[in-house]
Structure formats: structure tokens, C-alpha cells
Amino acid sequence: MFSSLRSNIIRSSLRTNTINTRFNAIRFISAETRAAIDEAVKSAPVVLFMKGTPDAPACGFSRATIQLLGQQGVDPSKFAAYNVLEDPELRQGVKEYSEWPTIPQLYVNGEFVGGCDIITNMSHSGELAELLDDANALVEE
Amino acid sequence: MRISLRAMQSCGLKTPPPYNCGPIESKIRERLNSKLNPNKLEIRNDSWKHAHHSGMKGASNTVESHFHVTIISKEFENMKSLARHRLVFGILKEEIPDIHGFQIVCKTPEEESK
Image 1 (cartoon, rainbow over the protein chains, first blue to last red):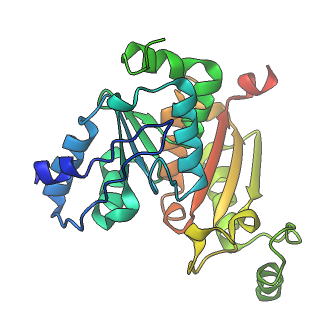
Image 2 (cartoon, rainbow over the protein chains, first blue to last red):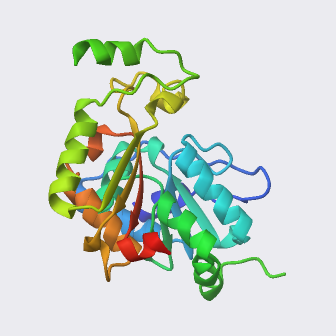
Image 3 (tube, rainbow over the protein chains, first blue to last red):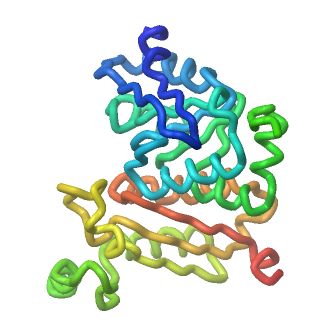
């Protein structure tokens, strides 16, 4: 299960158009969903659960979040995005997992950071840059 | 109420509809007022801006789909923003699943006055 999930990680360059691997229609029972999300959260230093893909966000809030991460200079090799629209169980499961009712959701080093509003505020205050830098997730200049 | 909702639905996409408070917005206001005793509570219904978006295609609720809520309350004192948002989500747990986009600004009176 984990390997099938991992193969569906959408690794994306935030700056260039690249591959979009699609989620297969995977059906999990609840405990498995939790375990799979656990795995997803830890699959990269920066993990975003979003609607659509980094290249084609399907929601304004997911789009804004991707743009913010791009502006910060997140290293594509340290980033994984999961499209919740490709999997209804992931869409529902991640809300329960994070105890957060909305998408997008950002994780850094396995820790839940927040949704679009929080990320926007953190980017204005400089906290986002600091967090990503501490996680060694930015492209080197 | 039925007439006002119909008026909102028939409204064009590019201009905001005449202001009418729907049932979800009323519930949000009621719950936040009673739980957070806010110094200020502003609820903006942005649904008209999003009604034509692809993500809203086939949606049954296009009249009360997007809200922007500003809450100034002492209850947020000594809480980080994550905890503040979780508090609000918890208070509105019955309404949020019906809402497509929900933006929140949570500040304490002290932060607001800065």
C-alpha cells in the first residue's frame, strides 16, 4: 500500500512545468488511510495536501499556497503535493487526520503548519521563510 | 427569506448581490457571538465571486459557499494562530462542511489596536 501511495506522490517543480502523476483510485479502510497519510506526511520535508496539482491548482486557496511556497524558494526535490480531488478517502481522511476541516494543508517535517490563511500570515511575518529555512527545504542560492 | 435568496441566486456574477443574510451566515454569527463574545465580528459573504469557478460546478450551495470572517476577541489571548483557527473551526463544525471556502482573521483587541 505504501509503495503504491508513494508512487503516486506528485513531485513537482514549483517553477517549471513537469510531470503530473495521477492518484490511482485507491480504497483504504480508515486505519489504513491513517497509516497512508502518516506515510505521505513524512514523504518529504514539505508536504502539501491540495486541490488539483501544483501546475494546475483547482482552487484559489491551493493556488495561493503553491505560489507562496514558490516565492519562498522551496526546493522541488524536498516537496511533495497530494491532490485530494483524486481520492475521496484522502480528501476526507486528511481532514480527520489533521483535525482541520479545510484544504489546502501544509506539513513541514511532519508537523502540521496550517491552511492558506495561516501560511499567508506567516509569509508576511517572515515566519514561513524561517520555518522552511530551518527545515533546510529551500533551494541554495 | 425565500424571496431574498432567490434574488441572490438570480443576481449576475460580476457584481455583488444585494446584501442578504442567509441561514448559514446567521448561524455563524449566532455561534461566534455566543462562544467568543467578540469585540468585533465581521462576516463577508464572497460567494458571488466564486459561483462561476470550476470547483463550484454542480454545487448545490452557491449562495453561501464562501465566507471571510474577521473576529476580534479576548478569547484569543495567549493562543497561537493554529489554536485560534481550531477554536473557530470547532465552534462552526456543523456549518463548515457545507462551506467551500472559509477565510478567518482572528485577533485580540490588543493586536487590533496596534
